[in-house]
Length: 109
View 1 (cartoon, rainbow, N blue to C red):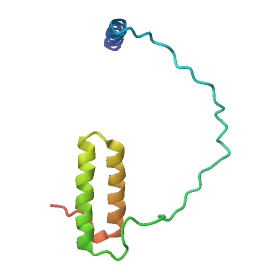
View 2: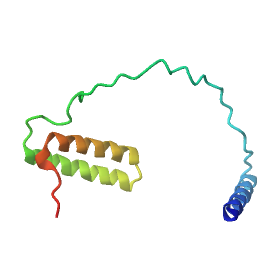
View 3: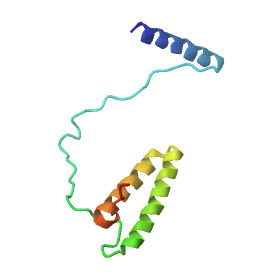
View 4: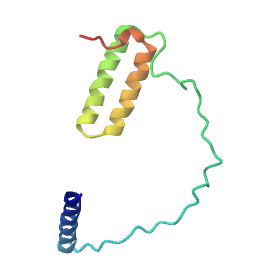
């Protein structure tokens, strides 16, 4: 616990020095208070079925595998560039595509 307190104090001093050097005056957040119950009566309606598949239902498994390879390459590129939202969206799309085509599941070594 003592270490955490000392680390917090060290960071506070460092932040204050930075602010002083750059002419920054910290200010508090000015936000209005919102009624937390305002949206309680509204519920999102979700459907159990997929709205539209990301793939043609009768697609050739070889074409699906090629599409998966391209999507995976894009996903890894986004992850390397720290674009995690885009990478996660591609990951979800890949999973939906694999569910639609069980014969394209990755093979275990």
